[in-house]
Image (cartoon, rainbow, N blue to C red; front, side, top):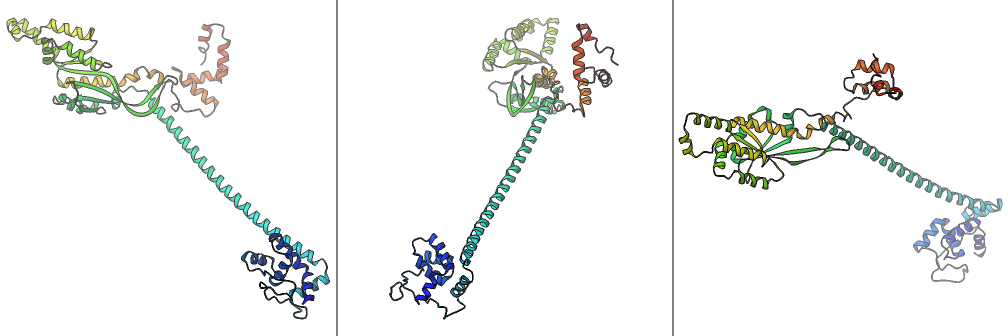
Length: 430
């Protein structure tokens, strides 16, 4: 048995495996590991046995000394089994003394190969994940760029739309909201306005005002003027009150205010309430009233007129003059309710055009998106010349024949010595 154990200690393969195991499990002795490896013939299995608590603890190499932790281990002798692993290793060692080193190198190589293969697989997984992440980032970036291009395209289209030259005042009525006192709706004023095809785009609301016979205007704001760009810029829609307020009077009510001497008090009160408003006073039936009064005077109905205690025409003229000069009100006369509805529509259309009256000349310079770009520099130069007033395509082509580029025309003007020479530079161009 001792001879068999000595052979076990001389087994180079077991010694190499024992060295590997002890490098990982240093708390075990080399001899104990060697004995366990003789049974398992596998370094990994021995390591697992150590970690699992199945290791042959208490094994002694003195076979005569018993231990309560000893396990029955039968060490094979060459006589017992000539085909055993120990015998094979012993024979191999006798034939090739370096076989142990070769086996150790092979084991290290396999271990390194396993480590390298695991590392390569891990690197491939990381690279695959990085490629996937990079592709996702590129996709999100492309999506973001596409959204930005679409948003910019939409913004330019909106700018172009709000900067179209606006001359049709009835079309502009779509921006206005007309707030009419509910007492005026009893006079069919709202019906006349809604039935008029010219003002179908006008939004009409019947509301309750603190003052009777009041009409106000509001506007749907979708663009604001930008002095820097000299153009309208789109804004979120909001409602803004216009600076005009209309007061409706029938002639009978108007003369009663004058007779009671309360007209100025009422107007002053309204102006205090609506201090930021420009007052428009609409008087319905004034001209017919004046004609009737003159007819009565001509027929010598003086006594009858005085008995009615109506204000005379001079008093009416004085009050109207006060309204215009002192109260700074705009006076409008109408014949009847139909004429009143038409006049309110006309005033609404005029108010609708106010923001654009002084801007239309500037809007001609906002050419972005309205003029097609040229196909090449020469065609672009041709289109640029045609944007100048009175420069038709034949005239532009004649200029290009002499001055094919912007720079050539600019240098030609620089060479002019006098203003008259510069003004006549293109007179001979055909």
